[in-house]
Image 1 (cartoon, rainbow, N blue to C red):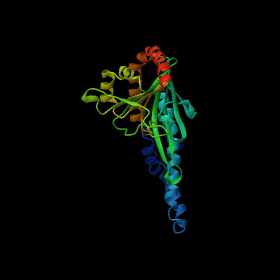
Image 2: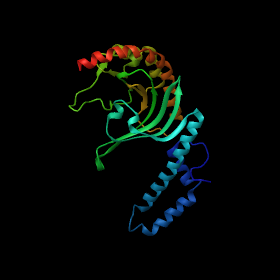
Image 3: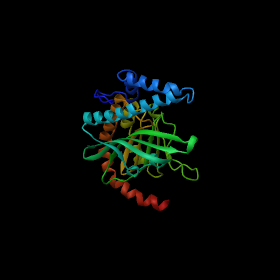
Image 4: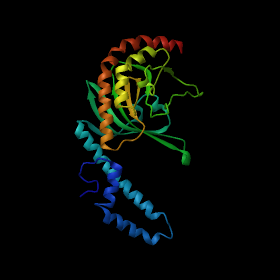
Length: 272
């Protein structure tokens, strides 16, 4: 049997360890034994070999996991997409950006994508890699101002500061104790529309079902994302389910706001 296996993958990282020391332990131990003569010359070698073996198995399991998820939800799977196919503050930060493990589908005729995203800040030993799991819904006509609902679990507004260190957005107050841990930001002048989108009904749903997810509107797209690369079936199912529920609630309103945004954009661009 191929080392990726044919069973249902629930947790890529844990399942890779389970296979490595379970079903494929003979080959694992063989690799360890082969490295033992070099132990006194290169002490870390056995650990390096085990890390590489785990990474190889995990990579194969990840492809299997993605294929299974796509089949379960009727989506089309692609290994990668261009980094410039996304828009918004989240995607303006950092360098060496990558969009991978892309699922494609539709929701009420709107193109929908679910994907992993990462970027890197810094270089060498001081570099930091940021990873996300993102669900995106595109609109044919509507061009959004920047609007961000920041989840209580995310302390950072990615890409929110300009080159001079000033904040690009204004914060919109939210009423009610249930919503106080969320933070709503938008371009100046669009505060009323931001509150229309994130109504008490929507905020209540998010408070009850999606405290870990932030939502960003930018360009002609709306994004829901978590600040981790999700590789477990239960968490990816949860994000996809919540994203579809939120998008179904918001899509009719966002379509109707096309004319409002189209009228406001020229006015606020002149003021900038």
